[in-house]
Length: 276
Image (cartoon, rainbow, N blue to C red):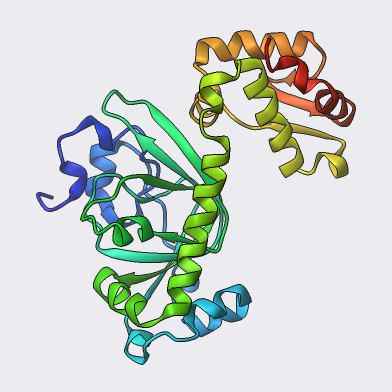
């Protein structure tokens, strides 16, 4: 137990922890969360089998050194699993082959700030490695079942020096995320909460397929909305009431709902909220 990183005495580590398959019973005692079972049948698949399932992976492994074919591990995580913890020593590099996840920053006072959501193909630990840092700077939590291929950090560092194609693919993904982040940087400081929340709802509605379903419900708690939108829980209540009053959303069992008619109305009127 002394070697278990969950025993590090800092309030930083506990607020965002959901399932931690690696840490066993001591994690259950320390956190009180249920330990997620491993999916052994999926984790026993080979890299070749995974590439057949996800052909988009092929370019990443086209020039992989022969010796690494026996030095990878494949892990399958359920939704809500912390697969990368802030302030931990990074020992593995991961390629996320399947599943969505969110990147969050945890603070000493217990608050959580969502930096971004990502889809595959993506990576675990690439920024830390390319920055030459020892410890991780963010936490990654799975949103759906997620499959990750891991390599020892040193193996990846040696590999990327020799493989210009892999370096280009990794750099492209990092640049894409930085571009997306830079494009919207500062919005939470200079736009009012009504605009920020409605913009978030519209994006969620499109992602959930409102044009096809005709109505969607956003299954998010107030705390999750706070983390993802940057609007305090207290302000969220007032903002939701205002949007409901304006007819662009409704509530169903306490969750934000939107019909296709409301979706089109919100698209046409969101600009009115910019200076509200």
